[in-house]
Image 1: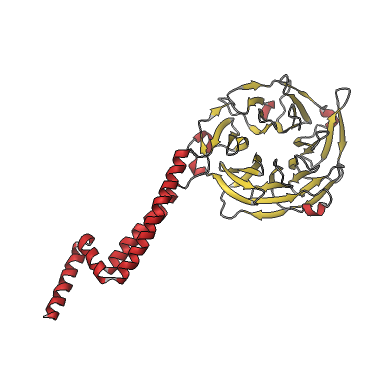
Image 2 (image 1 turned 90 degrees about the vertical axis):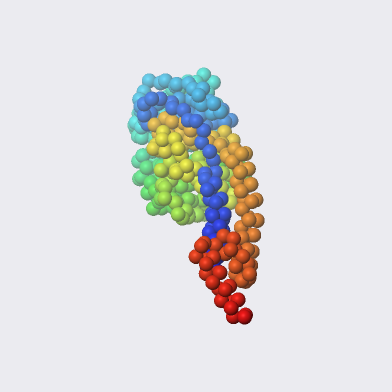
Length: 404
């Protein structure tokens, strides 16, 4: 009986203490998604203005569409006379225009005022190179562009409608994979396929600072007071880069790998304040808080019950609130996410409130049963099996005969 009672209590404890894991799921919930097209659009990314009003999605065959960031069912197709693939985009700090870059020397300028899209630089002046990245510097006076050949350029529109273009010294020979500039500190971070991570300073000086040998896939310098940017590589690696204008040696990347992560990191976007969202494949999201230098699972692939998203590749996200926003997939599927509703959160709190005292009580009961033969016998009489009750009756009969 002693083994039986202990086993019963142990089983009850395991059930109660493990039960909260039933409710353990992603930190956000998905809403009903929408498709931009019945065809595979081959999207490469999304960019949102600083006002949180307009999102641009872009990709293969020169595809660009402007979306209302709060209600992306409101859309405007942006048509221009070309079909080069658009690879990257960035909004000007003034939030009224954006540059989009792509293959064969493509640089486009988007204007929010009239929803126009036109070439901002002649492809011949860019030697028809594939433009892989673009980022406006902090003041918006220059845009930096990276190429598939590892070249770094700075450009801006000139008075005659063309573009003033200069090459930055010190570039590498491998593709520039990602680039972003800090909102308030006049420094930008660049990641290349082979050379690692570099810094563009206020005077356009470029310096490699480390991170060599990692397959970098994204960089983000989020809003907020933090003087850090974060880069991700597809092999679960995260790098924190400090921006210090007076001492560039402080910008050597601090690299770490997330343990127990089975997915690959395909990109990173700002979410809210110093928090960023890492997109993974298989489709999922991980939050990285720069202030805390900590990462948390946000959307587990197993929790995605929408086949349009779970079977696709995430190419970007944008924020509509502290814990809400939209996910963009390569085929052109948009999925909203938000924090759990109050009902599900309340249910978890109720379960915790019940489970903890009950589990504590069972621990006490287990100790009492272990130390009290009378309690063990009473438990056997009430809930024991027929064999246990028969053994108890025989033992009591033997004890009674001995007393005689």
